[in-house]
Image (tube, rainbow over all chains, first blue to last red; front, side, top):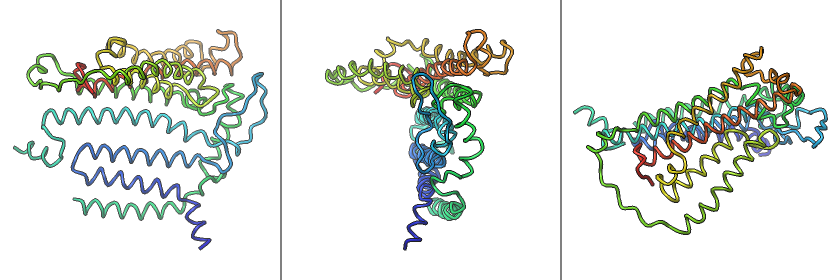
Length: 130
Length: 249
């Protein structure tokens, strides 16, 4: 029982990311409504971001901003005391780029609705076949 | 379709969960991601750039080239939305459908928004300018600035927000932000260093090289903030009004 609990606690951050990722992927594949596909894509994105940020974590570490005095006094840095800054940097830009790509996806959806009068995938395919 | 999808998801899920066992423990300081380069950034970046917020120094200095093109991606996304949605006046007249009557203005909402907008913008400027020393930076500050304009467009209407910040200006500034970033990089090139090697500014400004890095970062963060602000606002007004900018939500 103890082992099982330790096993779960040791890696459940990855499990959360994987489950979110699968939910997003299922939405993208199985849903018929294009807007729901876009929502699936956003969930997928959130899973990737969670995964990266949890990789950057260190036990007992604080945010990667050095403590500094007003006069610029500065001690030697112990790397284990600060979280890994690299995943944070990568995800910081990924979030904003994610919002922009979401905007493009919504614009294309609006265009599809204008042309086909629907955003249901099967109905669009019918109108294309005619 | 749904069954195939479930099957794919199940197989992928089992594979991923099995593979997760080989990943390092959560919070392990010795995990592969947290050694090598990460330690170098944590230990050396203050000496090299005099910026205590390591996220900012990695974002705008060590990975400055990457961030520049992230900004270009955002700019391109904004332009793409415009290209996809904008219609000529003639084609609009043909397909135009009568829009529903707007309900009367809500005085509580508008007063609250009027109080909030300047606070948000002030806070956003703080986030941009203080991004070296506290959590913040160009992307975050730009998004807060953009959302203050979106709040204005939501609580009044798009016309009112556009009256304050003309669409032509929005697009000019969104390109200007990227150009400011590139210009700071190019200036380093002309001063005899590599592209975006801010140390080149040291002799010109009469400061030490780490301080030049810090100032260079502030410059590019301002460029990023301007682009993000304009693109967020442009995305909202185009998506909410279907590209016609007449009226939206």
